[in-house]
Image 1 (tube, one colour):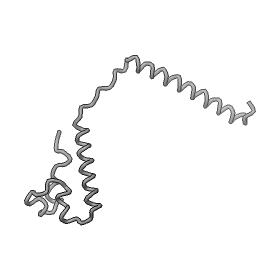
Image 2 (cartoon, rainbow, N blue to C red):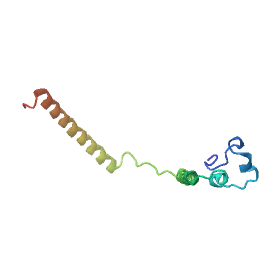
Image 3 (cartoon, one colour):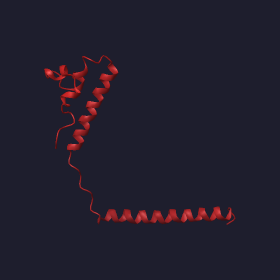
Length: 104
């Protein structure tokens, strides 16, 4: 599947002290010493949680689409066609009213 989103960034993007002893295992741990702003730390934590959810969702198998020839699909196609006809008729009536100024 390739490198997970939570993999280490290239060394050039992280201060050397942050990865030299491999003490920080998450972004939050890497930046907690240099970033005193709690809001920034909370944001990083939320980003890590979101990445974990994305990775989990990406790893789940996709459900196969329903076959196009199913009975439910055919009923949906018929209902869609009927709705299109109904809307086209209503638009035609509105156009007629606009053209005649509402005088029928």
